Image (cartoon, rainbow, N blue to C red; front, side):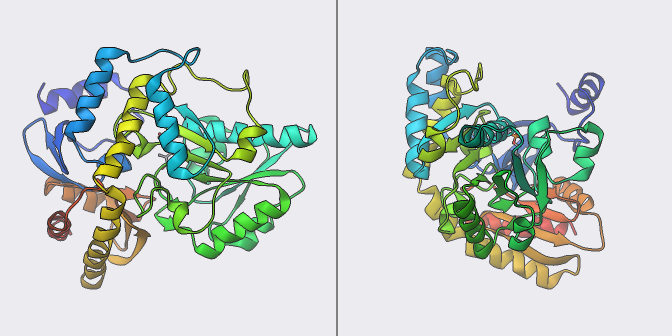
Length: 395
Ligand SMILES: *Cc1c(COP(=O)(O)O)cnc(C)c1O
């Protein structure tokens, strides 16, 4: 199917919830994407921070093909080997206790909210608990996840949302403390805010939240859906801060292309929250998705992905700082590891994203004034150089 035909058909039959770029992806190889007309692109978006291993890793491909030939789905009424293995690897990588696999990040957030409410319910038997969430956050589009997403524009038409949610300012501990009441059961935040504009949490903020939660028996929920899985230079971003959440959510790069998410509980939360009958999913944790997760953890180890991110980050940051110095339209850089944002000033970020695409570079935006770079974690220095050249040509 030709590009124009695909776009025409998509617009005719798909509900119009995205303003899509006029590109039809056909295949990928390493850090390169190819469109239906055979044009090559350097990818610094990775399907929104998903393709950590790049495209077409042979071991990943073979593992999935092998699993398809065995079994794809079993339901959670029975056991399956990939799920057991993926759970073990996720628990060991995080130092947490138990995993529940979902089909998406949003569903991981839903599960985390339910686990937190159940924990508080078991403690005092009441059902009017509150959750503190952050402004400029993003946790997903379903009604529960949307309720803790600090974006009025996303929320407004869908009210009433779930009750008992209070918002505070990210990286402002006093504003969080001001929202704590006797009813607070959890504080939910991204370790590094993604959609809201690439804001890394500060050490003082995360440590302060941890301390507050410990003092008041409040659960700390860290959303690692975008910043987790090696992206910031450790397996999970919180591991660099010396804090540990009570519940963590994962998705995006967890399956590196196969839809899968998870919420992961520490021992205290796992022992005192969801029990049989409280939560479920038909597809969640199916053998195909979990074979992907399990293979991703193996490849992270054998390819030393986290070490590589740490090594390449200074090079990328230096290149980006150079662009900030050179061009007035960039007012600064924010980010951690391979999750970077350039603040755009005086022109629409969408225009730069569009120009870049024409020049064979895939980048995306965050909020309405940040150019977001979330490349596959396997990028080399020469890819960073090429990105900078193509980006400069797009200004
Ligand atoms: C993408 C994202 C989600 C939602 O994940 P989906 O898989 O799209 O449902 C939630 N939280 C954060 C931080 C995200 O980046």
